[in-house]
Image 1 (cartoon, helix red, strand yellow):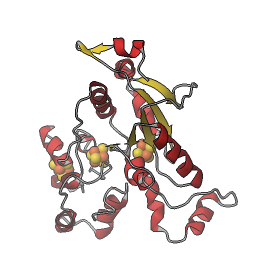
Image 2: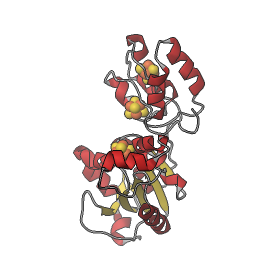
Image 3: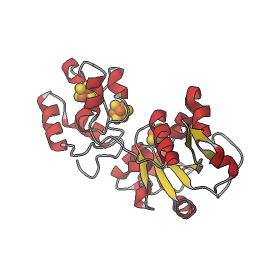
Length: 259
Ligand code: SF4
Ligand code: SF4
Ligand code: SF4
């Protein structure tokens, strides 16, 4: 809802409309929402861009009057489906926040087991809970925007929200993590004998893992035109086992449709 207070804000002299935003969590570790709260240096600036009306990790007030819904987590239960559909009805823009919401995330690993009752028994023992096959948010309701990563990068969320507030187009990188890794002048992990999915994974994390000398696990899903077949071939030539390759490709669910 536009209010006088909303319309009075400016950013670099440009009148800024502060959208009403809400954050919701489904099956997840809530680490993506935590990321938003984590970066204290820019939190106040970020909050000045938006009017937060729902954010369970940060406030007790609640409202169903919002324009942008950030949805974190995958969908695994019937009550979640019902709740998500209501959020979709309320929101003008629905954003899938993080790998769980975009692809099912680490939660979707359980989909590999045909017998979910067996999985539930192993995990919950004598205290079973409802937990069905894991679905990405877009498998239940239409999604307008995806913010990738496990967890998301706070800086990327801030940039996207700023663009929404200013009515500017949003460009999510289509190129692979290797581009950022090279720009950061890292030594390639393959040269150090480590596996890395950087060549086929969507950039935007500023090569977060290779910067710390850890190989990419593909948490942001595939880059545009990712050549998974060639990647598998190269990794095999470098001496990595099929299991090492598949563990990485399967981990977050982003490569399920193209591997
Ligand atoms: S994407 Fe990762 S950090 Fe975000 S909620 Fe899912 S498991 Fe947690
Ligand atoms: S370390 Fe990974 S991301 Fe960096 S250049 Fe090598 S393959 Fe690409
Ligand atoms: S380097 Fe790969 S695994 Fe690490 S944050 Fe970036 S996309 Fe995710």
